[in-house]
Image 1 (cartoon, one colour):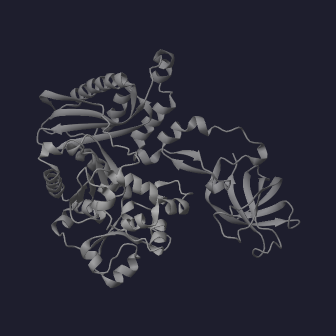
Image 2 (cartoon, helix red, strand yellow; image 1 turned 90 degrees about the vertical axis):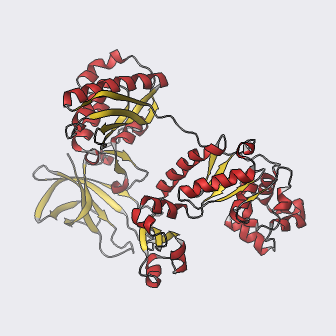
Image 3 (spheres, one colour; image 1 turned 180 degrees about the vertical axis):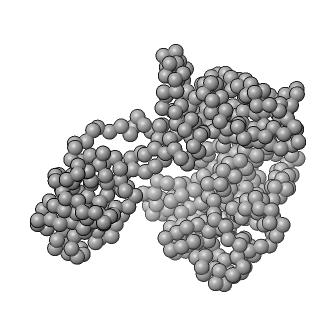
Length: 514
């Protein structure tokens, strides 16, 4: 069974917004950032009727319809919603798979009789999707390709019997129903092959000669025809539900005091550690949820720099996050889960017990700093594929940086090419006096102060990234200098005299050496 939601992103926004759900006819558009400005990536039916077509610039659409309701698109959220929908759709079959960006494939082989036949199964699926506020087009066929073609290009909701020939039954559908690339569809239409049935008139040999170099299924009509007919297997990756390690305690008496709550959390941390150990995993994210007697729910989340199942470490982290908890009339249910876990092999922890006890572990230190200062206050630098100093590294959260740490170790570079420990966010222009246009600098002015250069080393020439910058980008010559007061700087000259790419060379200060 193929399920296609043409307006998945729009329906999801309406479900998540009470104002939009109350006004289903509001002209809603979702936009994404492009080089030419915001562009519409999804639009409701009323917005399309008013002129807000998909692919148009937002400025042009607003000129036609000033009353458009605009929200940013969320492709990652749509993908996560589709994955949860695939798990929910397994009520109609043993497995389901994604058909990105807005569809599902559900295996209903041998289960239709449980619903009273294929028509009754589709009616049940249609009513369930409608109850969730989703407008779906459904189809059942012997192969995934045939079901997809029926759902996207067939009439309303169709079915094909197992004995029917999909190629003959779907001969009147356009060639786009074969799930081909747009370029291949355009080529076939220019050749006069606009329907699936038209491909049978020219024979397989002619198609094989024309597309013999196309290996991808979406670029070869013969492969798609065989997949639709069921002559060639089509591998489909099903969506599997990953069990979340979870422990909870329903308390006999509601807890109101912090000391008792700490004991409950400690007991949960030990129980979760035992469960993670049996699974051979360690937690990277922990969610603590507390239900109060009055119905309010308190949630606390921590993310760890490295996978762990140490109850003492987990308890120390949550101790800082529970200071602002207001138990009110009491907490009656506490749950601790690890929605993000990674494989963690058994180790001889006694060898590292001293380091962990004194908190000298790097991961443990980062976890404590993150809990105390906030997730945005702790960052690490990792290399990036660029030889330009301002692009050679970027700031990331400690967790991925620690995971990549072994692969990021590089050999120590010569002193000439070593980068200073402190780089300015933006290189600042300076005025430099030098003996010759290509000679060493002798004096420079920066932030209103004049610095006499006592020593200079260089130049180190760095060419521009021609694949990123314009053709007029200029070379850089870097110098490590020391002024008369012993302060060391990293400066560079952009451009050469007479290089034909601008006026006189410009000087900038980019770093301060330790």
